[in-house]
Length: 136
Image 1 (cartoon, rainbow, N blue to C red):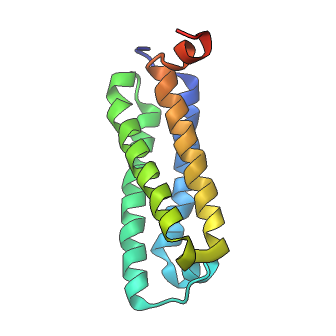
Image 2: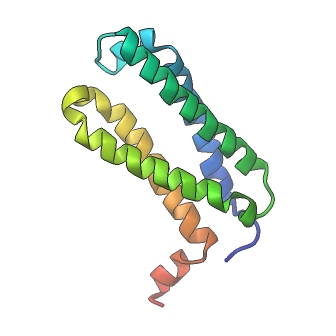
Image 3: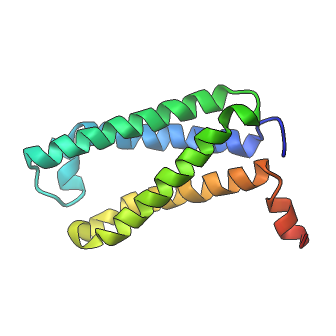
């Protein structure tokens, strides 16, 4: 396990901060974001959207702290939390593709990208990725 936070992991946190902030804002203004996702705005859906925005804000905040952390052990649980959240989100998006239709593509691309980046960050930090490529 690498003790310091690798540059790739820092970049992953930075990308998450930027893209996650955009989605957080979108979820907090469901009157605007619902039509972007191809859904009619309903007050009930708006309430759920704002709760999702609150969760996204918490994850973005954890990435901000992760970006400024100095050691891997300080942020390992944050990365594991992101992996669980993003993996579950991918499953939910796939299951509900009929609700969202093609408008889910933007969310699917964002969530998939972040999931891959956090997986690669975790594997690099835990020095597993080198073993994968070296055949150990």
